[in-house]
View (tube, rainbow, N blue to C red):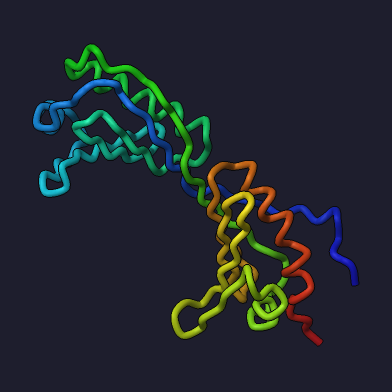
Length: 187
């Protein structure tokens, strides 16, 4: 049986992590005292700020580097990052700029329409795949050229981590024929 070329798999993006810089020094104490939805993590030297729409959490360092997590698309991540920069401007940091925006990590989930035999999948893809059932229930599969990591579960669920959304789709397309060969066949 050949893998169907017309099988439509739903890839659900669950988290997009992005980074941007403000090109100025930020007074964390002022942000903590005057900002809303803020948690001051003094022992880590950062402030956590949450936005409701889009729903993101930002880690803000005094150097001006900001990491945003929780968005469900690259566009939503950029909108949330820009909105965060605007919040900082409203807090009195007039020289805040929105620069060097970059999506650094995307997490997605995809469910195959069949279950997978993990020991067989690992043996047939040995240098790239590893499976330690005593440590983790999933087989780890790495695609080096696009820097993607896939966690393949026996239920057919696959968690994909890659630098951007295009690489997520490429990783699933490359992995589908490999997991199709190792599917569980119910008799």
